[in-house]
Image (tube, rainbow, N blue to C red; front, side):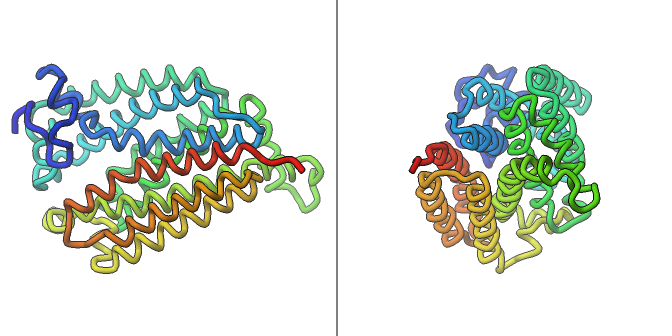
Amino acid sequence: MTPSAPLPDAAPTNWVDTHAPVALRPWLKLGRFDRPVGIWLLMLPGWQGIALAAAMMGKLPDVRLLGLVFLGSALMRAAGCAFNDIVDRDIDAKVARTAGRPIPSGQISVRQAWGFVAACCAASFLILLSLPPLAIALGVGSLALVAAYPFMKRITWWPQAWLGLTFNWGALLGFAAACGGAAGYIWILALGYALAPDGYAVGIAGPLSLSFLPALLLYASGVFWTLGYDTIYAIQDIEDDALAGVKSSARRLGAKAPRAVATFYLGALALALGASVTARLGPGFSVGLLVLAIHLGLQARRVRIDDGALALKLFRSNTWAGLILFAAIVAGSWVPRG
């Protein structure tokens, strides 16, 4: 596998293999820039969280925050993928789809990959410092989820669930960033209300704590969404994963995977609806949610356990799913006044 050869799960005409300098291609592939769908799937929950907070305040999303989340997501996704490849280098060498990646193919050494991870994390941290304190704390806290993810496929049949917890953390971070400095105060009051005896600060902490409930429901919705689309993605590797001893939800579910994906997507839709109700979004959200339900329903209907090429195509279509939900939340920011 040469630096100029597209990897199996990258589009043959991706920009890295067609336009990037040859010397940079292994580094860009280490960060998965030849497969940008992952950037979107990491970024969009953050955009949704920003949009949700703005909608609750009757505003449109802050374009500056959207841009910062985009840059941070691209960098952290690159760092996470490189870290994942460092941990999985021996497994990747045994799987046809991943054997050509820069580390197992010998294009980049483990030491060089660690340097890449450090550089991406440092740049991401500088972006994080421009956000409010609670958002910074949430960003730092996400590192524990990122660090643990590569090991999940070794200890549980459900690494896709852990990916859901990790990839959708941006919904909480984005919401906190859009709320500004008041977000930390609200969380402190909410925690005090949860831990204190009955009746403590009901008039203050109760209503304030509820203001974060839509973000928590949005986060939970994203976890179910990821569990669905990453189960679809894992269908590509069922045979190779079995040979390498790697666990996945697709392997665990087997022929039941398509029905399970439909169930996961149904859970995601129900929780997204709950987020809109508690946030008191306008009717525009309902229209968007209907479009999203149709989109996810068609995915679940088409998925086949024995068709890896179709699985990759359906997985990639989740970029549109995330954009639809983001647009629905923005549309819900308009609430008709009686």
